[in-house]
Length: 152
Image 1 (cartoon, helix red, strand yellow):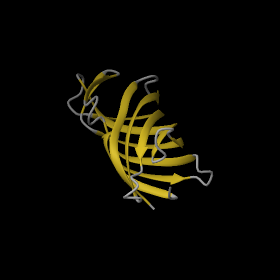
Image 2: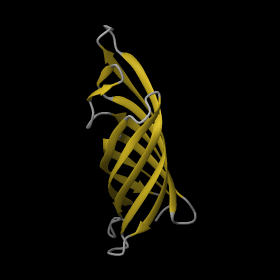
Image 3: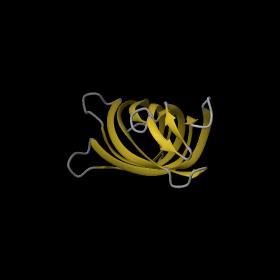
């Protein structure tokens, strides 16, 4: 395993990520930048209106990762951290969309494969949940996706 990785995720959130593996070999810090609400929840009720578009998100996750017992090239990981989201909210009382920003917590779990014949690449699949704290406590949003990273 290298010290850093960077890659792309198709899913929720979708976009770019960068990960720093910590020196202990068991933990990492990951930052994600990208779209929010693109796959699940594009048209979704929220407070007194509806999300009808794709928004923007940034999150930071503290991760624990370990090789599986089945194959040392296949790792499982899980973690949590803060997430910021921004989307346009459409209400019946306004002709124009209102920008809504939220802050909450994200939790994630996944599998990552490091192919032996391509040591600088890894492929992953993950599933998680976003729970908003502000301004709409306990607004839940499913997250997950698949992607590829370059390890360096």
